Length: 281
Image 1 (cartoon, rainbow, N blue to C red):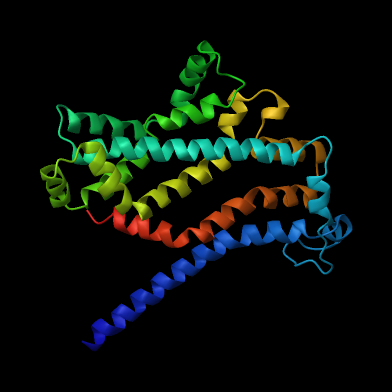
Image 2 (tube, rainbow, N blue to C red; image 1 turned 30 degrees about the vertical axis):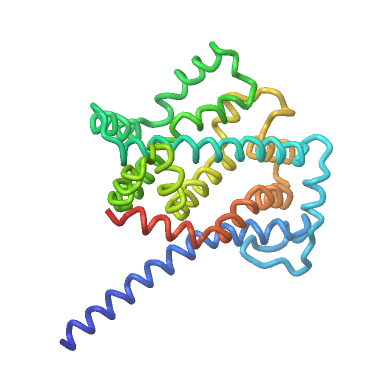
């Protein structure tokens, strides 16, 4: 008994040590970024990148935000529009499709779901060129349409899979009782399934928001005009123009990351709960 208790304690200590090392590995790069963004150019040149600035300065952020060539306010507006529409479209598309796979019986349902899961194995590079050719044929290139409209048509295989697993954990007796009362599939979906799906929907929303906000390849492919570009492209342009002015580049990086950090901490409870509840079955 004592040996089992000792083994459990050692296992727990090992797990905690691994988690601590993982946390440090993720936190240190962000710490370095913030520290460099708060240093003046002279202090950055004479101090280690690991050291915290002796004289904190927010001048770097003012310079980045007021740059006349790279307008971060315009990039912020474009990124916000794309991210908002993409997130709403994904939540709408994946909830509807996941409900059909989880709660409706129709011919070929399981085969279609297997095909859907198989698409998750395809690297993005495989579909990149065909997608670009398709959008070019319908004259969507150099617009926000390729980055927003596809979200309404399914919302992605991973999101559908995750919501389907969650919907399958909701008791079927609720559907049967609603059918006896004359409820349609739309009524069951709207009045029973959706109100019970808050944590799962929050998880999908956070994933989608983070992916759309930090997307670089999509805007790089489809957005040509400077006034339509996003924060990621603007940050790349800014780093190209400023060369080795790392204090300014790091300030821009922090500005781009702030909304994601705030969203994660605000929705952390729902995010963790959604992951746990989705894995019940």
